[in-house]
Length: 288
Image (cartoon, rainbow, N blue to C red; front, side, top):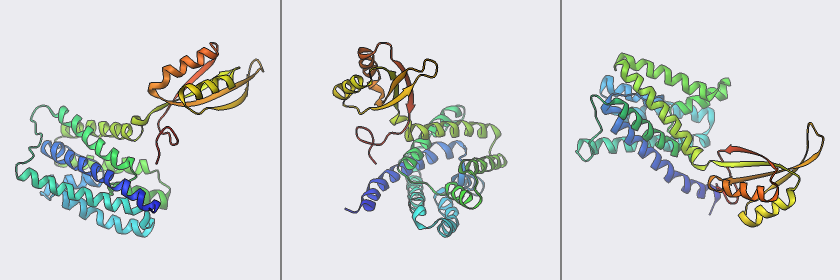
């Protein structure tokens, strides 16, 4: 099977699941409690509050001109997943709206516990977007504008997205109470943490840098007992001038204690530095 087709078949179902979760969070937590969202989706939410426009329709219509501009400037390749993600999001927004009207889904609406709504909105939206981003998709909107600004003006994508979010959420003060805007900031913060966790935290591993005089036997023991690869570097002490070896090894979090034990069994005086690693590709870890 063609590699590009194989990658597409692996990616699109994940993006579909992510957009479905994101659409659910918007309809179940955001709209019923008059909270906000950033980006172009936030504009669609604002139009829903101000004019009653369906969220799915506004999301799709607002993104069409961005698709055309992005296609011209960025090319069709980078826009493919954005177009699919936006169409998928609009589909699920329309579907969930229909289910709500039919009474099959009852949104979470509160009059006094908005912090709960904001927390769960952040978790749900962040989970959806995290899955979409994790597999290389986007939901269009601010992401397209950020890419265009980065390519044409050299602007930071993060700064473009943050600026758009601030402007859109600030504009919502015209239609929703300021305390709802503050709750929205809580939801946005939680969503950003959730996105980071899904993209990186779930795969967090630990990298060991071990300074020792017994690199070869330590490496052999780790390979035998844990079936983990190691790399040896030659080093020189900055103060003593003595030659040392540095053993580098990456392991899963549940293997940390076992690796420490093996290291100490070979060299009780080894100097160990442990760092967080958020993304590892290769044998024994993730494969893309």
